[in-house]
Image 1 (cartoon, rainbow over the protein chains, first blue to last red):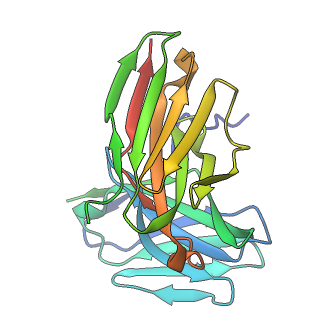
Image 2 (tube, rainbow over the protein chains, first blue to last red):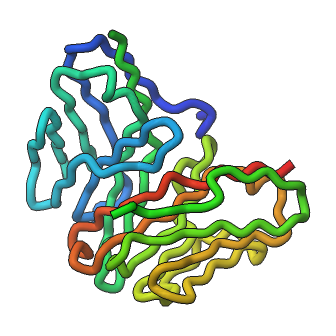
Image 3 (tube, helix red, strand yellow):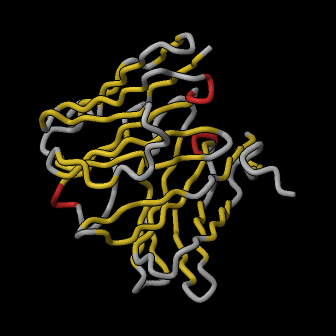
Length: 114
Length: 116
């Protein structure tokens, strides 16, 4: 069976390459999604978000793609840099009592080799 | 702004002892969340408050866990008695009402708890 939690999925890339990190979410009622970056010893930090009425959103060096049909998100990082090395989480959000309540995925560890 | 401030950053205690973790949210934020992070379970929502009122504590694992928010600038998460399986990093996060429609959380740097 799956060794849940013992190891994070890991993506290793060379500096300058493009990175693609994938995330499957579970609830079709989720209508807002956020990617967070967590560096070692720190709390998660917001990178980019997307609403369910969009399928693509671009930021600085990052692009998020949303496929609602298969409940899949991806985060693309262009020209990956050593400073991008971190664990990346997607968070799906559902409205509850007027607030968005985030549920986090397991995370993917990105390792950038210089 | 100093961001979300958590204390202590690290705590090592013995099984059976009481542990109190503290959080100061960003000024003006009126939603506060407590998360626990472990390798096995990832980031789990324990409880969240809106305007100092606990809204959902269904993630609190057991009666040994309790959280309070006596005012808009302070919250505590208490574990009594602590057990080795409580060892984890505990994060506090806050959010402004004006951002309720976006859901972006601002996290503290976490409190790493080790229960021996």
